[in-house]
Image (cartoon, rainbow, N blue to C red; front, top):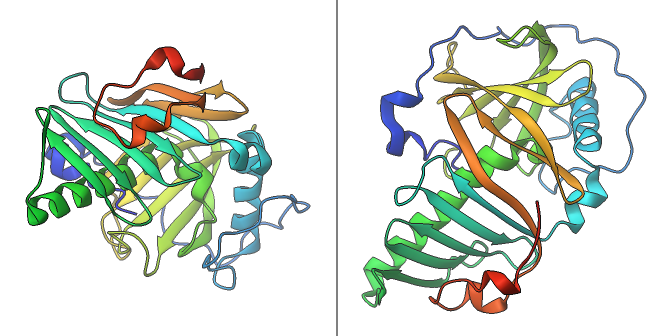
Amino acid sequence: MNRLHLLAVIGALAVIACGGPGEPRDAAPTPPPATLGNPAAEGFNEAGSDAVAMEMADRVMESMGGRAAWDSTRYLAWRFFYPPPDGRTHIWDKETGQVRYEHGDQLTLVNIHTREGSSWVAGEPIEDPEKLAKALQQGYEAWVNDSYWLLMPYKLKDSGVTLTYISEGETEDGQAADIVQMTFADVGVTPQNKYHVWISKDRSMVEQWAYYPNATDEEPQFVTPWTDWSRHGEIQLSGNRGQFALTEIAVLTSIPESAFHAPEPVDWSAVTIIQ
């Protein structure tokens, strides 16, 4: 889960120097009654995670629409940060793992499970095996990073994650929050990363996050808000990351299968979009 492939793209612009919220406390508050219906992904470090942090993750899922709504959401589309032609756009079929990824004049169709697919530059197919493999890996890593910037709150109990309660605190705009730490083991592209996540006390929504390149870092590389939540279909999604933004966010209920297998432009007249 290469949550910071972004740094290679925006460099120092992404660095927002802020103090970290500190190390995990010895004693976390008593967990509230358990929220049902949000089983952890296979490989989630339940034994190493604390009960309070896991309960908060469950409450976040409920606040965003619930696990059943998330599981039944099949197609997602979004633009990552930049306007055309520099923006990175994605259409993702959660059920099959197919991704349609466009960046500048390059189009890549890749399956995130098999890493197989095709890629074109300015309409010309990439046929050299080494260049194609590189393009498919770039498309995969872009999806990993860009989807994490959109969907991290749905992945608090994902494979390889350890959740730890840090402390009570406030977001930079003064909201009372509980701070939860995410660390990773043997997953994704950058498992050495660490995140601190601010979960609002009033509505159990993620409102801010901090990124640490290494789990041993005491200061974050940056802190950004996670705000402007809005409903898309049966779930809630947010695109505001302060000076950055994810735009053109949409949940799709149908899309032609050719969108994931052919280089021709998507026939949007055949797409059903829930804004």
